[in-house]
Image (tube, rainbow, N blue to C red):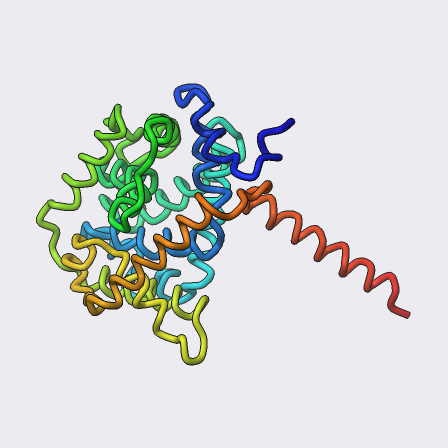
Length: 300
């Protein structure tokens, strides 16, 4: 019987795999089953304020108010998440992931020609990949849940070390990716505690990141709740550098408590999903196409 026939199968499957060999499957199991478009949007909205800690990051993304994050912030999120879903589902050994990263590299180098030096900081690339890989572990600890298991930690480092091999900076290949998961956490602490200066363009981009999340998920009387959620989940470094306000202590507590409850329910109580989120999305799209085709066939 397939492990997927079990009521709770994901955690068991992660722990029976060899993280040094099966790191791609472990990463996929850790991200593509419980995570949906809403939580991926949270990843995007909390990630980019950190990727813009360096003033050059804000300048690159805002581009004097002409960046996609400013002019088309919904499309910017969708385009970025399409890349993330592809990487998370297929892993670094898959040609679809490699082609996606080449597209990102080409886009980076296009803007590097316009803003020389803005894609030259090796540590910034390493930080970004460490953040995407390890911040969920840190968030879990902040909201009172266990962090990644040993298998997940080993697989996370291996997975992102392999991903890093396909990225390039203006100076060539990315080097110095941490050799352990703890090294990834140490790099995050080191980078976030550098004395970054405030950037108006970084703050402008953050405002549009907050708007994007709020506009997509919260309407009517709930408008504004999205801003509170993201501001509550951002850590001190993003608040400090971008001068973002903190929600009230009660709002921070409520957001953290809700996140903990949702994740605990998914992982410990509710039945594990049999299909990953990307697979569910593909099947829904196929059904929509079939429905449209049938409607067109039936039309006089």
